[in-house]
Image 1 (cartoon, rainbow, N blue to C red):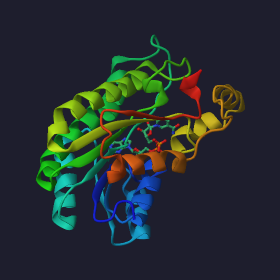
Image 2: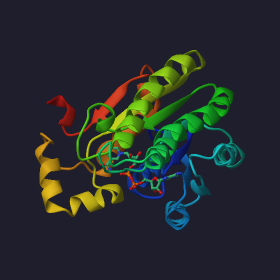
Image 3: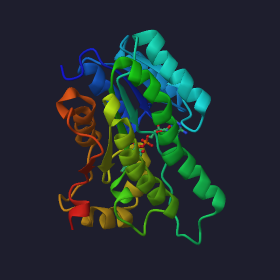
Image 4: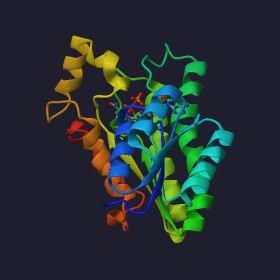
Length: 247
Ligand code: NAD
């Protein structure tokens, strides 16, 4: 098993890619704390997975919630080895349509949430002698696209460079920090976009492999970065986008 004996927190783990990763991690031998603001879905998921997973209410913009989630990992499972900063929200609109409130909301969840999670996890990982932090950015943290929004793309760009900053700072303590850049993936987040045939056609036309990705396409990349197989990998960008950014 690729994560035998490891303890992980996955933010935004109640549904979508985070939920898939929670199940995969447990199947690979980890204990998982699923943190999310979606309580019913998160509790149902933890119950389905069984004793090796627990749900905690975690709003990633709250320092208190992060402290409680890390404490739950340490109290219940004894330590913290892995943090997947996966929680995120999307948004659409042009620069002129976007208000300051719209900007702040997405930046708070997608960018500040990653900073707060990383900051809170470091001391517990230090106690464990090291760890792996995986920050979920996007292909839109690498290139621009009209059909997204300025704040979503800026937040994902922030995650990319924050990852490198943290990787350099934490390397001497054996804490690795990497970013993952998914392209369009079939999850609840993309449901509205996928049900609009015209938008769907535009999106798929930009993907050389000719299809949306599935949660498992991303989860196996996250699993690699979480495991000791990637012990010489830090500050890197794992792009899983069907070729979107290759053109
Ligand atoms: P999703 O909407 O299915 O799941 C996201 C989860 O994050 C939800 O369970 C939601 O409740 C949670 N969340 C939102 N705000 C939160 C908060 N303040 N605190 C805690 N949890 C919160 O989305 P997904 O597609 O599985 O996306 C997962 C990550 O991947 C996100 O960061 C997203 O931006 C990124 N991403 C998604 C795609 C895609 O096409 N789906 C592409 C690139 C990147």
